[in-house]
Every structure is written in structure tokens, then in C-alpha cells.
Amino acid sequence: MKTFVDQCGRTISLAATPQRIVCLVPSITELLVDLGLEEHIVGITKFCVHPYRLKSTKTIVGGTKKLHFDRVRELRPDIIIANKEENTPEIVDEFSKDFPVWVSDIATLSDNEKMIEAFGEIFNCRTASSKIIGKINHAKADFDAFISNFDELRCAYLIWKNPYMAAGSGTYINEMMNLCKFSNIYANRERYPEIIIQKMRIQGDPEAVFLSSEPYPFKEEDAFEVGRYTHHAKVTFVDGEMFSWYGSRPAKAFGYFKKLRERLA
Picture (cartoon, rainbow, N blue to C red):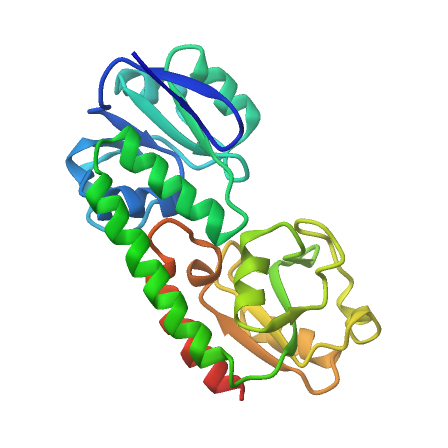
């Protein structure tokens, strides 16, 4: 029996390398596939859309916060992968009664690297784990050299409407913004604060406002409404997966960030 400590300080015990995985986190599902573990994934959420083929080959167990508990139990997983932010404490507590539940907590690239390393140990795929970490670090080093030629740009990153909500400090999105030299005007507020767009100019006067593609489906009229309350800020639709998905996604995200920074130059 081996024991592992997850990113919330919880200890799980595994008698052997897990062969049946239920993943409740979309970006981690993508990571598990990239680690070569696709055949061992038996259950995913409806939001686990990459790679797309999984939706027709794996059992859908619900959303990230509303799950079919019986459906998960019927899959008899050896391990369930969850996330502190995306899944509720009630979900983790309920499944922990019957199964090992490994909970991730990702706010930085360092947190992400530690998770990938942990999966290398848990799933006995250390070589694949190291390769993904190497790809991410290489992409980041290249991006760091690129971004050194750019100045800071005051920005706001909106994730929701009615009420409007933004990404604040302590979030992975804020980490990505910092790496891109997007100075977050809401970094003085924690997590995902509700904001009043009419006050954006006096709260930071952003030079750019990002409307994320997820979780809220912003439309052109939203961009127009937000833009009215800025001082000629560039209101830009951005790929929310690139800013908020961790796992193996950063290896691709840095290329996206390059193009975005060039567009905003």
C-alpha cells in the first residue's frame, strides 16, 4: 500500500497503480490523455471536451459541480481526480467515503508542475510526466524572452455577467496575466470579485479588457457595453482555456499569448 498527499494536504492510499480513473476536471482530463492514460479513463464530466473523442468513448458523469453519484460508483474507479475550485467540498467528501480522491489546487505554474510530477508517481508514468514538464518549461523560457520586449499593460479579465465578475488575485488566470505583463487592475481583490463596470475607470482605468470564452458566453453587445465605461480600452474576446486550463495546456498557451500580445501592441 502506497500513500500520496494531494495538493490540499489530504492523504490517499493506493494498493496498486490505478487502472480505472474518473476525472472531474476538464484540463486534467486533457493532461491524463497526454500522459498516455486514455485507456484507463472510465468517467469524465460533460465539460471534458479535449480531446473531443472522449465524449463518445467515456461515461459522462455530469458536470463539475452537479454529478450523478450512482453513475460514478457504478464505474468502480480506483481513483477520482478532483479540483478544489472546480468541484465542491461535498462532492469530495461523498466520494472519499468509498474511493481514493486526489484533489488538485492550482494557482501557479509551480503548483501545476508539482501536480504533473505527482501524477508521474501515482500512475507510474514518470517519463511522460517529465516530458510534459520539459515542454512547458521550454515554451515558458521562449515566451519570457519574447515578453521582455513589452511594457506592462493595464487589464481587466471578465469571466461572468449578471453580475459582472473578474479574475482577481490567487487565481491561475491572474498568474497567466502576470506572465504576459497584463497588469490586473483587480489584483488587489481576491479570487473572483463582483465588479461594477461603471467604476472601471476609477478602479484602474484598464487599457484592455478581456472577455473570456468561458464560463460565460460573452457576445458583441457585451463588448460594446463594457467599452462604454472605459477610456478607449481595447475590449478583446480571449480563449478562456488558454488562460484558465492548467495540466499540459500551458505548452500551447504561450504561443497563443504571443499572438495576443502582438495584437494589442
